[in-house]
Length: 281
Image (cartoon, rainbow, N blue to C red; front, top):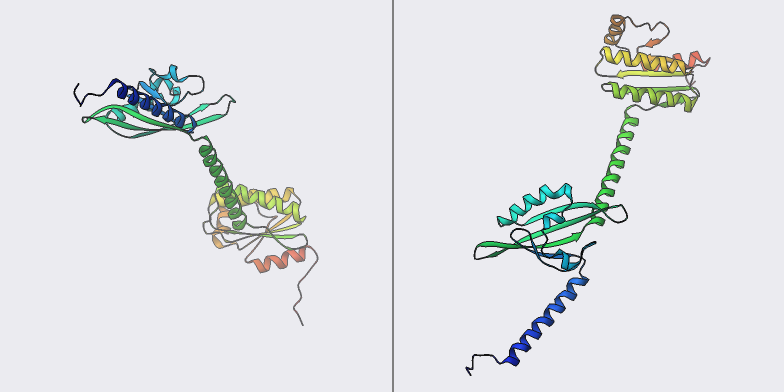
């Protein structure tokens, strides 16, 4: 017998060792949280590390990975298989409803197996990324809540209702006024009237940069809404441009007191309530 030839006993020993290694490898796969797939170049499964919900390992072998992909992700899976056949590494995230009706997410990263410069298959590692996706969604939700809170704070700062004294509030307006901001101005003012039981409201428009037909109409609606709440409105900081716009629009502000500055408006508000300011002696 040729010394290079192995005895039957040696071959059996090597076969037994290889089988034992396979058993040990399978036991490792069983405890791993990820599932490992080996496919040919067409995506047909040749090996799978363990069963998946609803399908045993024996059933999976021979199936195509695209057939296992949820319908909404199949077109993307087909494109990724084409990339794999071109020798590219791919990553695919898919969503499916679990037995409890809740969405489950998986992430599948596939590496090409290349032999003699030809792609002969792929090795896929599939991970459950549901917890990661839930955490991302929660972070996004919290971020939106923070953004909304910041926007609300900015709105309140840009149109604050300031109680000067009992039954008198001031709202200084700054910057441009559009239809959305005008609604917020009206809501904030009406809320301030209710909260402080105001009888006199001072709208100071000194800081309003652009005065046009829209701004005047918004101011007029706000004044009318305040009147319905039982509050008298004084508009201060009325520039020549504001006065001209009111006249051009034919808006009747005969019942609205308009004054040149906030100080004069405060004195008028106090006088309407039977109060006055006295200089210190």
